[in-house]
Length: 227
Image (cartoon, rainbow, N blue to C red; front, side):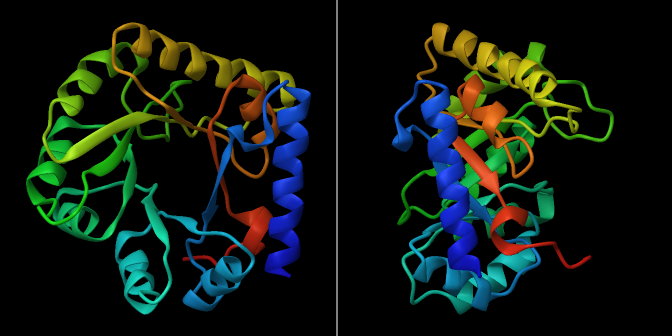
């Protein structure tokens, strides 16, 4: 089932790219495996998926350890608390959810010298959602510059998790705000290449707005088990 659903998601991405006049390989797929076990990740890998996103840091570490025999790439897409930064710095390849300089500094200091720099995105609260984490758009440039200066991090772009939109046009409008901020930061010389936005319900709107990476969980793995 996971293999078939992965195929369906890839087809959706390709269709959305064509509709937006973009190349089918312009958008990467991050399979969000939170609450699903190592067997589900193995099944997705067998179907050709190598990049996986996790919200719960300790749960992910257990999976990372169980799947060391596979060449997987792990992305932290959930909140990062100070007492979890070492786990992220030591075990993950990417962190999408940076929204405070303190956390970025800890990640940089705790990233082992033997590993490549941790690839990071700033999480931006693009629509001001009251329940969402993220730096305010007006503060993103200052934080981006500070993060880009840290030695063991590589700033790659922005991540957004906007509030659910009622329709395609509303979702597109919010995602375009994120794309505009992305372009503004690049105009300031930051050389960002990753715009992490779009999930199962709104990937088409995100791709139309310029997303380079969509984070898909439910459409691949099914409904989540309550944590």
